[in-house]
Length: 487
Ligand code: FAD
Image 1 (cartoon, rainbow, N blue to C red):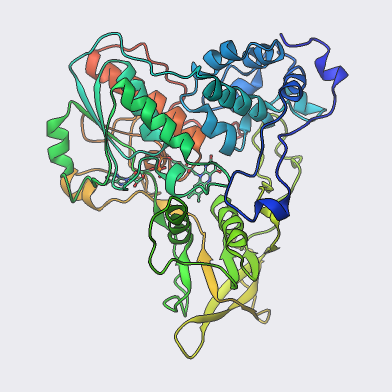
Image 2: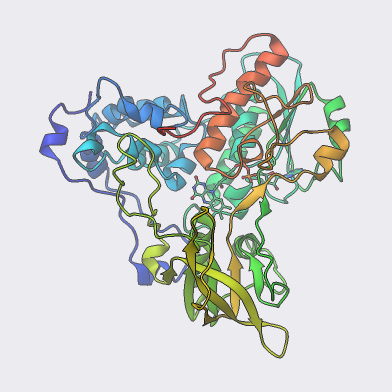
């Protein structure tokens, strides 16, 4: 184990340093900087290597956290990288963007600040990339079986890499012009720069995975034709249908889904020409929705030079600390203070938007907002008599996602969906169509990168078993697994 007295000698937690706010909002480079190695090692030494490492179950990937904390403390970075890559294909992604459910289940967290597990992960991953420890892993034999993976987000990439390494011939189809899914065109660069995605695509190409960007399955290649051409198909198309707000004034100019705004910003940063880009410069920006997507809009709007940024959340303010009814080691529902929240902007809780108000040119000028009231029947809605106007000239709807895009999957393949809009599947990730599997947000509903990778790995094992009769690939999670909860 790491230093047996480490958690006693170093009771303080030290997180990754971040660039000062006034500096970092001048550009889109990553907010967080590398931590000095000695500091990461000291932090890793706080890991107690507990008898039952609850962090393993907190992490959907089952990361071997105490083992790599020990190796970091011992300055054995290459071994730590090998141990980390045993359970996670892309630790530099999760090390940057994961909300770290492992840390909320860390045993040290019962009465001290939890071990900085995410910090160890990202430092191991970055050291590995910098030192050339990460190389293509070629399959030892080819099976002659073919698999089409549709969608190149973290779920599709993880499934494709596992299946390629198992010896199958894998083609990834992606409708966007670049590979990466929401890692590429949702998550802003200030959280994760895109050269990291490029590196993994190059690694996977060298391993034998083939990529077909700008190809939309459905219109470009029919789903049933794809199924006939390949021995198995993996649907990793995400849950990209945005939730709308059908209230008066919705059709006014200046009201956009958050993803339209974020995708355009990502494209512009990648050097693309984006005509009529939705831009926040000099505008009063109001974001509806207080989640991850909303936070990414806050950070982007500040970097665009917005005049003001206000977030309206319909619900009650979430606690900042773990509430009593969600004790350790549960993953509590708390307000995640992201780097974007530290950069400014106002958040109004219990704010129900009832109408968008326009100007004489058909553009939005304000929102009419009421306090949210919780009613006896459990519903909630605007409280009469509390309405007020909030000026706005750019409104971004970050209200979540209602599920997977269904149209061509249904018409061309007869795919079945759950009442929550996800692709229906069994415990083996297989859909109602034989040989067609589904992973990540498409099957789970909008979730997290860590779940997408974990599901990609697990589904790859089931596809391998389907094709070969048995598998040696690991399957860290089942489709029904959730974060640790009392229910
Ligand atoms: P996606 O990443 O959505 O990828 C699906 C891909 O399929 C897309 O590229 C799409 O173009 C492609 N596709 C769809 N249909 C077709 C078709 N018919 N043919 C070909 N291609 C198709 N999670 C975190 O853990 N941390 C964060 O900080 C975080 N921030 C987020 C910020 C934003 C703005 C959003 C929207 C999400 C965020 N998430 C975050 C969630 C996370 O990004 C997703 O859970 C994860 O990307 C899901 O991976 P996926 O592979 O299932 O799907």
